Image 1 (cartoon, rainbow, N blue to C red):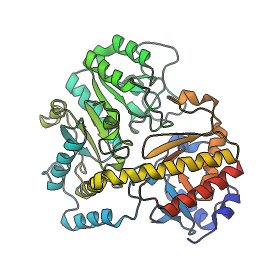
Image 2 (tube, rainbow, N blue to C red):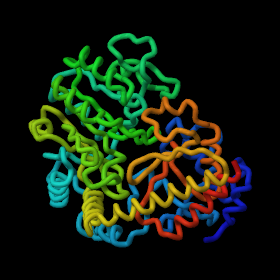
Image 3 (cartoon, rainbow, N blue to C red):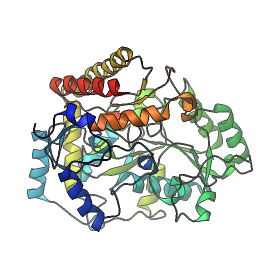
Length: 451
């Protein structure tokens, strides 16, 4: 790899970008208002230095200066095969010659039917499937479906869970004044431009709190169309559900006649072919998939019970979109799933080995440098923080963690040539080589030493 050696980059001041990166960043600033996905967590202090990526080599991203970065972002989850798997890319190239685009309101396409058939076989809740292009759209659709099917008003969601950037599910925090009903109240992290009415569209409570859930459903169950949650709190510290929590949620939704949806935008096809619902043995009524569904191209879907999905067939609930069955992304998803199924899930076994080695190596580096770290997450991704806790079930448990140290460490990793997600989340691809992991652990140790 060309460019500066990572030891030299590690010692550079975070504010002094290399000339090539700085020039490209100036060009970007002149014509673009920041990165194309600007979530609040990326505006925290201790930001890593700016880089501009030019190309990839396997699980290495190469910036305009030729510096390589080991990629534990994987496109924020979609790139399950990295960027260079020839078999996966070959299927996309073949589809370009066959059919690249077809308006989704005009006709079915053969490969969308085939993919839907496959999903109904491997996803527990999937009796029917509707495709769209992004996770945000799919989350919007599932809320509309639930309201249209039930005639009820509210979607119950949980603080810290992420369901896309659209106003009704993006904004707010749990109310501090205990007012009723428990609609969201504005949060300091909210975007400007969200209408005040959005805060009254959903109910918002703490996750992993069975008592609060029971009380809310007892009081407002007649007005709740949908309980919407990440089965694993992927976007906030990879918090797992407490033992029995998902089963209790399922039982309570059945008791109160409320639809249950798992947002599997991150967990889908990374934790396993059946997603988190298969992992925990709890089947929701609806589920949302995106990211790793198609292995890197934009594609999402809502999967669920036939009786609910039929609201789309009768046109009682409308969901339109030019790219809803984008043949190129559909072909990518077909190839992705075929490769994931191969040899009795050999890919997932490889991920388990890589992730265990990586997490063990980080823990060893922390011990060498007298740091206490928390590493937690299911197959395919994990969260890292500086705390003595062994496990956390909500972000509230991180009040005693060292936020400043976590942010500094992320910046040091960035300078050392290791890219991780904005919430200190490592995404693990089975395409990482032994050389990649060896190199990553050396760089991680060097960054740890700088703390």
